[in-house]
Amino acid sequence: MPKLIRITTVPMALRYLLPGQMRFMAANGYDVLMISADGKELNDVIKNEGCRHIIVPMTRRITPFRDLQCLFQLIRIFRKEKPDIVHTHTPKAGLLGMLAAKYCGVKLRIHTVAGLPMMVEKGFKYRLLKLIEKKTYAAANHIWPNSNSLLQFITKQQLTNPQKLQVIGKGSTNGIDVNFFNRATLDEQLAIRAKTSINYSTQNKYLLFVGRLVADKGIVELLQIFLRLQKQHHSLKLILVGEYETKLDPLPAATIKEIETNPAVIHINWTNDVKYYMSLADHFVFPSHREGFPNVLLQAGAMELPIICSRIAGNVDIVTHEETGLIFDTGNEQQIQELVEQALNDPEPVNAMAKKLKQAIYEDYRRENIWQNILEAYKSLVN
Image (cartoon, rainbow, N blue to C red):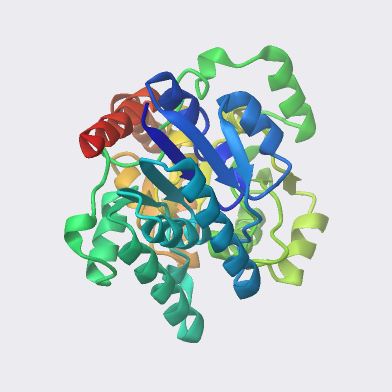
C-alpha cells in the first residue's frame, strides 16, 4: 500500500480546504498520514478523515528558529515513515515539507499552490516571498496550481520550470459538495436561526461577504462603497461572515470600528452555516486582492447567489463577466459601486447569470470528480 503524507501549516486548512479528501484517498488504497500544527480544528479533522495525524508546530508567520526546528522534525518523520508521496499545501508547509522531502529522497514531491501572498506585497517582503516560492518549487518535482490563471502567473514570474506545472481538471483544490451547498437541502430550524441572527426582513436588501476579515480581502473598500450606497438604498444591509485576523494583514482600526458600530453592518464570526446566509442574501460581493481558486465562489455559485467579484486569478477562472457574474478591477471602488447599484436596480440579469454559473459548477466542480482526478494523477505518478 503506497504511503501518502499530506501537509498543511495549520489544521484549519485540512478542515475547511480539504475536507473528505484524505478519507477518500485512504478508501482508495493509500496509507494516509496528515501533518499540521495544533489547533482548535484538529480533533474534528482526525475524526472526520479517519487518518493518522502528527503535530509539527509550524507557524504562518516568518519565524526562522521555529521553522528550522520544524524542518528537522519533518526530516525525522519522513525517515521513519518512508512515504511514496509527500503532498503539501499552504506556503510554510510547502517550503518546509518540500525541502525535507527532497533531503530524504522522497520520489514524488507535490505542492499545490492555492494563492500567492507575494501577489499583494512590495519591496523587501515581495522579494522574500518570491524567493520562498522559488525554493519551494525547486524542491518539488510537481507543482499543481489550483487554477489556470494562477499557472499563468507562476509562468510569467518565472518561478519554476513550466514542465513541473499542471492544473488538475479545470481547477480547484477540493471541489464542492453540491448536495450540501444546495437550497433544496436546507434545514428549516437552522434557516430560522440564521434569519434571527441577522434580524432578517424581506423589506431589506442584503450584500454578503464570506472570508477572513483582512485588508487583502478588500474589506476596506467594500465598507467604503457600502457607506456610500447606504445613502441611496436605506434598506441595504452588509453581512460579513468571518473572523478578524489580528497578526497577518489586520484591518485598520477605523474599519473595525465602523463594522462594530454601524447598525446596518452585520458581523457573524466564522460559522459552519455559511450556506444559510447565502440563501438569505441578494448578492455576494467578493473584492479580494488575491486568491488561488476561491471555494467561497463555488459555494455561492452552487447556492445560485449572484456574484460580483474582483478581476484576479482564481475569480476569473470561475466567473465570466456578464455571463455568469459581474467582475470589477481590483480595488476600484467606483466600479464596485456601479456594479452593485446595477445589480440592485435590475436584479433579473444577474439572477440569470447565477443560474448559468450554478449549472457550470455542477458540471465541472463536483467534489467527487476533483478527488477522482487527484487520485488518477497519484496513480499515474506512482506507476
